[in-house]
Amino acid sequence: MIDSNFGHNSSYNESDIQIKPSIFSQIKNSRFPFSDDYSKWKTQKYAPWHLGRISSTSSSPANFSPYGQEYYYPTAKNSVIVYVIDSGIDPLHDEFNKNVELGANFVPGENHTDFAGHGTAVAALINGKKSGVSKSAVVISVKVLNADNIGTTTTFYQGLNWVLNDKKKNNPNTPAIVNFSINLTSTSPILESAFKNLSDIGVLVVASSGNNSADQCDFFPGNSEHALIVSSIYPGNDSFVTFGSNFGPCVDVLAPGNRVFTAVAGSVNQVNPFIGTSFAASIVTGIGASILSNDPTLSPADLYDTIVGNAIENVISSVPDNTANKVVWNGYSGLRSRFSYIN
Picture 1 (tube, rainbow, N blue to C red):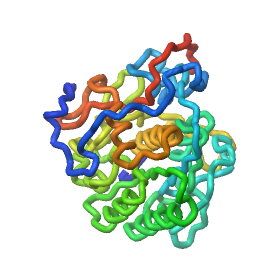
Picture 2: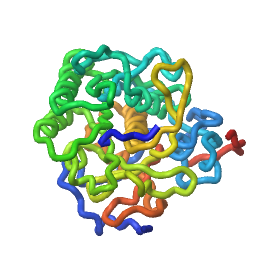
Picture 3: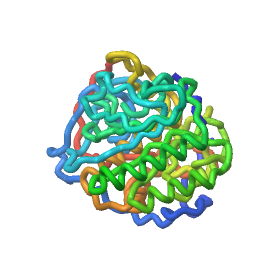
């Protein structure tokens, strides 16, 4: 499935990148809060390629196969909430082990059902049993996109404001992060204010760069000062997704976003390959949730710094000029098992 939701090789030099105005602009390269004893990490055998890639410092031949690498990930120490502002989530899919809550629905004439399927695919990449990065995180669905995967600034603001109030009222002591795999065609002062409000209470927003093959600084939330923006890479050859993915100085980090296998809404256990920066963003959100589970005291700026500051530099090809060549990484650098391909 292709993500339609507004969704030349270059060496990265941070001094050459025009940094967007941001509260996160001073990167301190914070260390991951994970154990250096990798025997305490967990292993998922025959993981989908996107999970193998984020727990590797470089690509491997296994990335040519949908399933092949093992996924190494840190043990969660604390509860974490992930608010997914999207088209809804199908909680009955096998990927979700009773760790999905249906929080709010702002789509007129529709119930909580994920008719578009976009939100379910996004959520499974965050905490799915097989596809997910942070498997113990609790995902809360905030539905703002209709059956055609379309929403309005009004519903987006309502969803963001609901998250603000729910976090303050019902989850004041639980760390949280927001996934916003939605893009507008212009700036949005009202949504920027909502992002700022979330940042002010300690919640980072991770957002997709969009799929317009254009400079992300021309779109919201790419031009937001209060969000971490993600664009995407291909499997196997570690190259930027030049067909579709937005680029430019407003992109903070890259992640797998092409042919990533994740849950299909309305099915019991079906997974399909999905394409788009929405799914790259959700993978980064999952890493953010893993970090928060090990250090719930991190501020949005510290969490941003840990994700972006530890990303692997200058290993992705075909990254457009004036775009940071940084691919997300979860901190694993231990021994790896031999792998077997499953096609």
